[in-house]
Length: 110
Image (cartoon, rainbow, N blue to C red; front, side):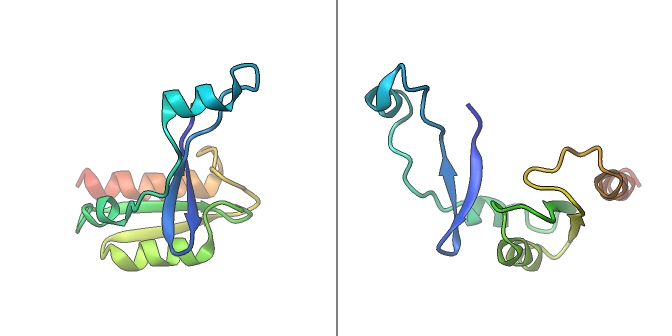
């Protein structure tokens, strides 16, 4: 299944989707384990001074503006791009996303 990064109480949370109801909740927990909050900031901070492009869909109800601001502030070489009229996650074919990705690729291939 997909892993969604959610912001809860100032930290990221990994949510693993529950299996379809025909398998029951117990099967989901036994396969995936409980979905407890996991602090992903140390992994994010490990990106250090690497160039990073952060893309946020302007209408996202999953990745908040506070979280992306914190992300951009934590990494000195991060670029934040807000993708208009897009939720979560951006499809990456939006003109603003393509421009942001092209900028990152140009930076890292110099």
